[in-house]
Length: 153
Image (cartoon, rainbow, N blue to C red; front, side, top):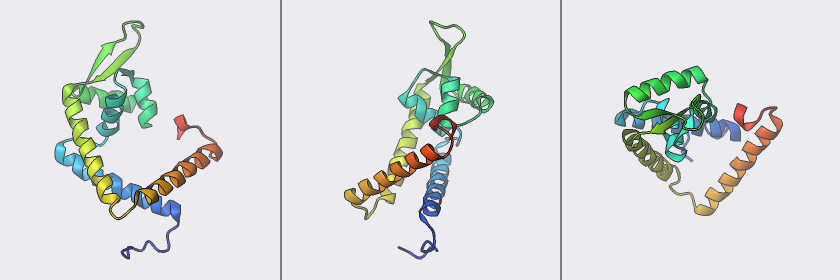
């Protein structure tokens, strides 16, 4: 390990540092292709679950509904998403990713793949599986004992 003052950091401090590095690298790379930070999780979610409600998006990306509303307005103006009235429940508005939104999402997936490739240099698949299991257990522990559920973290 290169000396970056990591020797005296515990596991949670290291996870926080890793998260910060990934977030910053993603922000820098996303800026290059024109993806605004608040758009990333929304585009990613819609690429997997197209046609969901604004409230579902807010819960998934852990943002307040008014923030999501404003963000979706901007994304719609940029032709990244479109809104449609629900055919069965006229009170519901469904959000769909557009072709332009899919293009940006694909760019983000390339960036994520690049970051992951770099992060996993010299890490065996066995080591990776061990770390993944430890992280999953850590997440489960925190959600079980943290006094909150997955929707509220």
